[in-house]
Image 1 (cartoon, rainbow, N blue to C red):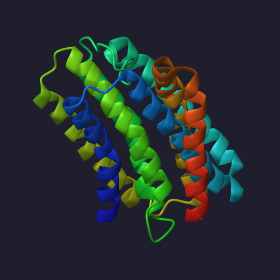
Image 2 (image 1 turned 90 degrees about the vertical axis):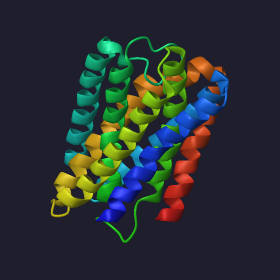
Image 3 (image 1 turned 180 degrees about the vertical axis):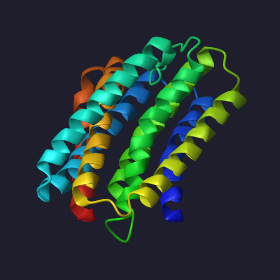
Image 4 (image 1 turned 120 degrees about the vertical axis):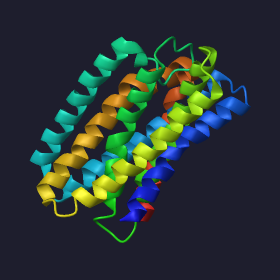
Length: 241
């Protein structure tokens, strides 16, 4: 049970790692774009292979389809809402204006479905889904980098930025623990819908936030780097299977 909380904290800690890197080094936006493109590819693979493919293979195509569409719709609606309140640029390294708390809320909104599925992955085997942990960790680093860079430009004090990202670690850990604890007796078709819900939210998130930022910063090479990230997901899925 506590393993779930630990793995959720580890995946969420990548935002804090990105924040530290942004504080210590003046990282060019092009490098941030490269890392974000790579994380995008890894997350696409994790959503497709780990969250969707497993349950499609088990014949739960209806639950998967419904969950996926609901997840994408819910994220899109919530993202639209918080974007109007200052969090639309939360994954960008430009000036973040006065949207600090909204950026935090948006980051939490991104992290919760991912962390829930990390906890739930412990229910289907003896160990956590390494593919999910690696994918989420890699995708969270550029989020910490770009958001912290933007918050720094907006004049946010370092201590406040650190507190925000430490809170993300705590929330990610709690969400992962909840995914393990509350889904332990869940029927297969419900698990399929929940996993697909998370996948739909992840795909909607990377399409509306990560990919535009990655292309803006790294240009035409974004596609190739994203493809490499997707290939890594395929390799991880192969060896974890």
